[in-house]
Image 1 (cartoon, rainbow, N blue to C red):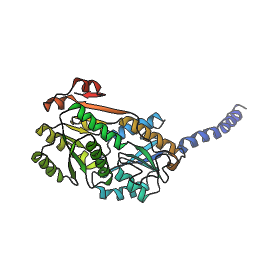
Image 2 (image 1 turned 60 degrees about the vertical axis):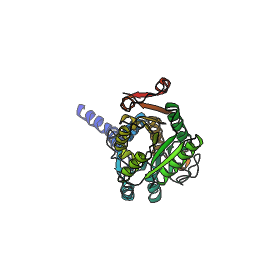
Image 3 (image 1 turned 90 degrees about the horizontal axis):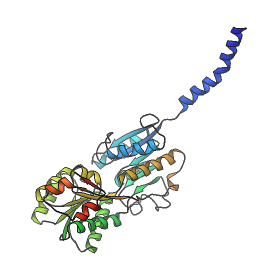
Image 4 (image 1 turned 90 degrees about the vertical axis):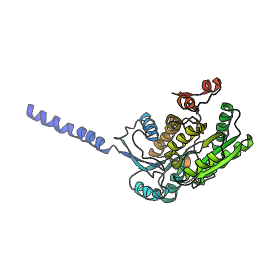
Length: 326
């Protein structure tokens, strides 16, 4: 009798055990492509760190329930099509870290795209409108015109006597060229003389530096993309040698040795990109998700760089900074 009861209990528990085993094996591992035009996306890369925090906040375990498929062109845009073709077979959606990367994904894939970009997504043809993107692209991007003017105002407030600004940008990137033109227009409105220094490859930086030695500006504004970011140390070193103040768009450049930056809070940007990705993974379509804009912006100053340049700034600017890097 005892044996019969044990058999019945064992048989009765089988469906429950089977259901439990099935639920474990059926839990879908989500695969998200990360595509950068610049440096490799290591675990310590700010993009990976920020997105990992964003997905973790929404219940994903990166490396377990969610896998990043990471690809980087390392400032070689001709590599992007092959990287996109590879990701098409491995990811459910792709998060891109530049206009150039987003453009290639849009042109070569029907996968949902979340573009993190400083280029105007409407003017560049990535989306129909911010409110109704249409197609397969949505994302998070800054308002370039307003921010360009703000950066220049920060420079003017910090160094009131400056008159000429050298602008360094990737002239081969249409998105960055439009960004430069926006900054140039803002500078002219503020009464600055502009020294345009477009670069197309690493070898061009030496020519840009020589031009600044021959015709010295009062400050540098660097437009950030894969090419300029990968050559940032050369810009820092030149600015240090020439005792030139420089303003950058993102705070990671200041932590690496640049003087100052004014730009979006990238922690917020990555969090919102992760939120868009989560909604798409749960069934939303990018065409129905408005292209978002940052709401928080940060002024960051590197005090060590400031002192090494032998420059002084109004005490009010240091107090105004959201972060002072020592």
